[in-house]
Length: 394
Ligand code: ATP
Ligand code: MG
Image (cartoon, rainbow, N blue to C red; front, side):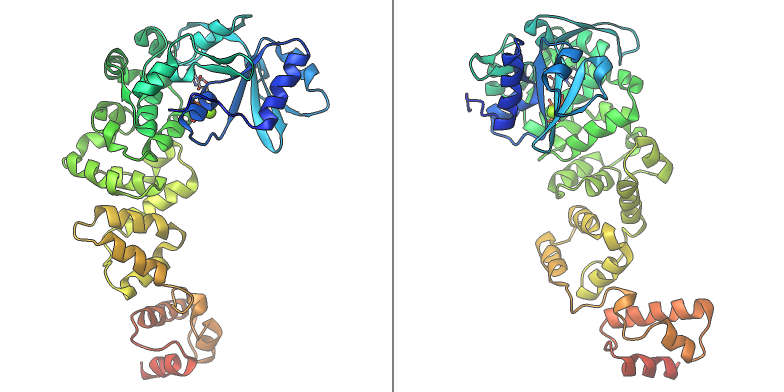
C-alpha cells in the first residue's frame, strides 16, 4: 500500500491559505483514505480549527457556497470542484439515531477525527505534518478491515446510517468488517428504518456498484431486507447472488437483478428514492424481461422497445438468462448500428404516406409499427416501394 498522500495543487492552496491566516487545516476522511489506496477521489474534505465565519473571511472573494453553514461547513469552489471545509467538531447526544442534537465546535483535531465513522475514514493529512492517525486507520487499511472508531454499538446508535456505510465500504473496497463492528451491524439492522430514504439510496447505489456486491449482500441479507422488505420472498437467493456478481456494473441493471425474483412496483422504487430514470429503467427491464433475446432481429426489437433502457437491459439479460452467452450478446449489440432500422423515424415510409393511402388515426401508428417489425425481422427491405407494396397487399 501507498504511504504517501498526493493532493491536487488546488487543495494544497486552500490548506496553505488557511495556514497563512493562522489556522490549522488538514485534508481528512475519504480523500486521505483514497489517496493511500491510490483510488480516484471524487470529493475533497478539509477540516480546520477556523470557525465558519473565519473560513469565510479567509476565502473572501472566492466562490463560496453556504449550504452547510449551520453544521460548520463552508464549500469553496476551486478549479471547478467544490471542496467542503468544515470546522473541527464533536457531535453529542443523539436521540433519534440520525441527527446530533447539537454540533459543538472544538479546537482539537483528535476530537474531530474521533467523531468519524471508521478508522480508515478518520485519518487527516497535512503536507508538513504528514498523516495524522490516532485510530490506527493505516493498520486497518493495510489489513483491509472496516472497524468502527470506538464502540460500534454506540456509534451506530448515534447515526444508524453507519450500519449501511460499513457494509458499503466493505463491498466497495473489498475489505472485511471487523468482528465487533460486524456483530453490531447484524444486531442493529432494524435501526436503519430511522434513516431517510435519500441517504440510504446514496449508500445502496455505491454498494451495488461494487466489484462483488454479493460478498456483503449475502452475509448481510437481513440488512438488505430492511431496505427492500420484498427481498424476504426471494426463494432463489443464492442464484440472485451469483447473478449480481456476474452482472455488469450498472446501477439500474443490478437493482433489477437483485429484485428479479420478487415483486417490485413503481411505488416501491419511488419509496426507495431512486431517480426517475433509474425507476423507469428498472420497470422497463421488468416489463420486457421475457422477450426473445437471441438473434439480431430479437436484439433490434429490444432496442426499439427499451430505447434508453437498453444498455441496462442488456446487462440484466446477460446476468440473468441461464443460457445466454454474454460475450456474444454484447458483441451483437455493439454491432447493431447505423445500418439497422430500430426506430420508426428510420422507416422509409411515414405517417403522411399512410394518410395519403387513406389510413386514419390509430391505424397509422399500428401499421407503422407492424412495418417496423417486418423490417427488423429482415422480412422486407426498408424501401418505400417495398413497404408500400406490403401495405397494398393487405
Ligand atoms: P465516498 O468515497 O463515498 O465519498 P467518504 O468516506 O468520503 O466516501 P463522505 O460521505 O464523503 O464519505 O464523508 C466524508 C468523511 O466524513 C468520511 O470519510 C468520514 O470521515 C466522515 N463521515 C461521513 N459520514 C459519516 C457518518 N455518517 N458518521 C461519521 N462520519 C462520517
Ligand atoms: Mg467523500
